[in-house]
Image (cartoon, rainbow, N blue to C red; front, side, top):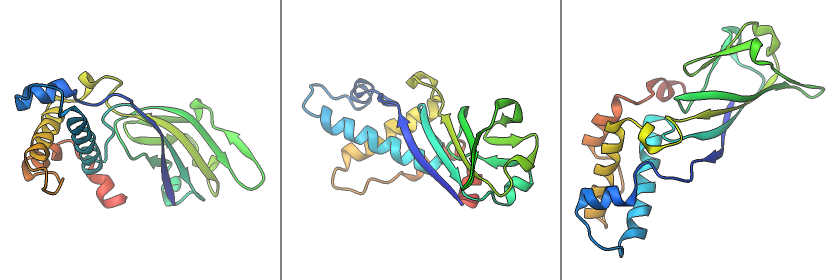
Length: 184
């Protein structure tokens, strides 16, 4: 069983209030709190839909009694793009051991073991960073454009439901991690 826990996330947004105000042709600051809330909602929906982290986030993954994927010598990490592994431990009721970086390698979003036996019938705790980077400029432009479209939609339809439009889904589908839809 896999359990993900968000440890930390960027304190900046993927797009700025000024970018949205320019996009929507809004003057003044009265709407800034609403716009900020709408930006956060759009980011959250985009991350959930794509199963990706936009800006750098730190995640902890607990894998209880390693499953069949361990026999195949890898664990798929959700929330790509994966930047790096920060900490990797195996443990059971009696002991705990830090796994050195020479005992595994990261291939895109898969953590691959040189020797699958090290984790067999053990619990794993993996702390990793994911996201396109620390700055909004690292996020692909189509995703940023989609976020602007979402905020515009939410802003214009304030009493409407805050869901991704079909147009945004078409844009985001090229970034969607489809394996997470089927693997969980």
